[in-house]
Length: 293
Length: 220
Image (tube, rainbow over all chains, first blue to last red; front, side, top):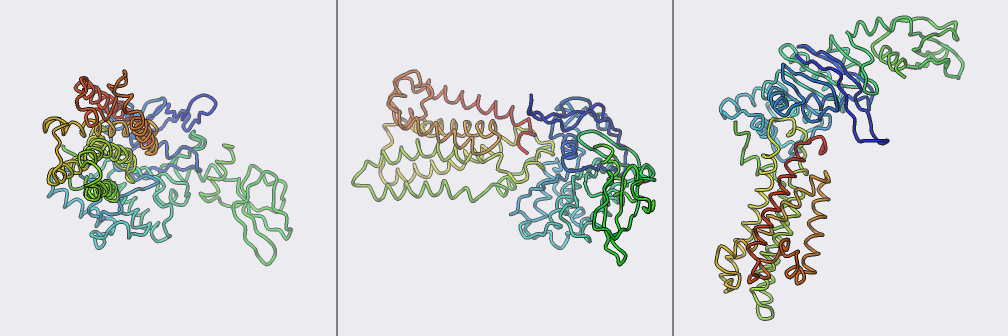
């Protein structure tokens, strides 16, 4: 569905240039696809390129056969796209229903009867039926995100791009949002970009990890865990000194017998009492980042 | 597919900006009523329609496109840059046109004689040409600088310079770029050339604004 080859993006020129993406090769098929990486890894640039907003500096992207580096290709892709940006700006004076209706018009849904039906459907889908007639300015962060996903879905997109959708949501909202995305992925490509490891682990069978504009991992969450086996330990000590030896402390827990550390690294030889343990996805992510650095 | 809705174009317009042109309109109406015996009504009327309206139009146009909270969502839809440009600038022009025509009507009712500006067609050109030019300049400036302030600054600078050196502008080669010729020098022999040149310059500014607006990543 989406074929990306040698994708690069550079902002600025000369000494001040910033390489946001450095030769990304990726194939993305239908279903839920996760894009994980730290802040500044190039995720948002990648998503904006796929949304046709940012022009790549090099490489090729074909979405359902359309070349995204041409104006005609961009327009064709935008017609089949739903996009929820990281920084979601909306017209606060409009009601949720009006905002989604307006976005539907901009996306080309001209038939008002069909459009009204679709607007009601998507507002229902995101649980905003009762708030449809309320102005957006009175909405909570979670409700605004739901309006955002409703507008992204209103044209029944074949590709849904969501950039950091759960940022700022409370745990209940996050779970609800994740489940909604998984449901949507049954019949379309859903690209989820986040730096919250848990969101990816709970929703995606296929993911890629981006760091400094390059792909450092591509596979399933299970494969990511397997690649981390033998690199995670728990270590309990009464000493006040934090473990070092090139190990990253993922978590700490104060117990009666001392402090228990969860450590990720190449070797825990410096701590003979450290116990090997099963890695979690967060450990796997830390291990990948450690290798990339 | 039309991908356009007048209803939402109006609803998403920042109506707080309407106070700005309305305040100017009201100010000049009050000025006309207060200074009836001291200043020629005609001078107040032409200062408003031919000098103030272009400035207000320019300032508003500087904010028209980039001052949009949902600009990234808008860019992710298949609407063309030309449509965004047209929708937003034509609304500003419409507001200025309503202000100008309402003031002309008010002035006529209070007995102002506009015949020094020529016939009805030339009277309309006297405010329309500089207003379109300022709107185009502000739009181009804002898009070129990727911020609304650049457009507003450019408009303010050009306006104040031309107001200060207006007499000099009318007699040298800058006369083709002189915004206020139609309103302040209606008898000038090069008025038609001036108005054609200003319209052409407006078209060029809008053309480059459109070209630049296609590079959406500059504005998010």
